Length: 235
Image 1 (cartoon, rainbow, N blue to C red):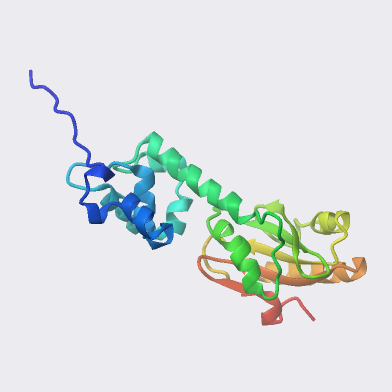
Image 2 (cartoon, rainbow, N blue to C red):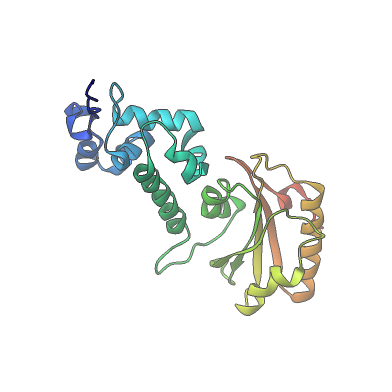
C-alpha cells in the first residue's frame, strides 16, 4: 500500500529575504507592500510550486482585484485552491474590519465639500455589495458628517421608499442637510428613471421639512454619478 506523502507548503519565512512581505513591512512600512503581499501575510503559506505571494496574486487576478475579492462569499472562498476555511475566514474578517474602520473617525468629523468626499467615505463598502442599499449621510451646519444610516436594502424605487423613513434620523438628530447615496450592484452607476423620480420626491419633501437634500449619489464599480451635477431631480 502506497503511503500518502505530506504536502509541502512554502511559508513566508522560507521565501528569499527580499521577497518576504513581513520583512518589507518591518523595514519600509505597510504602505510599501502591494495588495498581494498584504494578503500573503494573512495567508502565511502557499502550495507546492506556488509561493504564498503567488497564491495571493492569483486570487486578485481571478476576481478582478481587491474589490472583486471582497465580494466573494465565505463558502466560495473556502473552495479556492490554497485557501480553506481558516484562510477564508481571515480574509473575510479583514474585509469586515476595513469596512468598520472606514466608518469610524475617532474624535473628529469628516467635512464634506464635494461629492467625491462622500465617495471616499462610503464607496469601498457600497461598491462591494451584491444588492442595492440606500444610505443617508447626515450633515451638521458645517457640512460635517453626523451619521451614515442605511435606510433600505433592495430595489431603490419611488414606489417602495417612504419619505418618513429617509428623513427620520435627520429629524431625530436635527440635521439641517443630508446626502442620499445608493449603489448599483451591476457596477454601472448610470441613474435610472426610478433614481431620478426618487431624487425629485425626496428633494421636495426636504423643502417641506426644512432639511436640504444636497445630492443623490449612485455608486458603481470604481465610478459614481452625482445627480445634482447632472441636473437630475434637482430644480
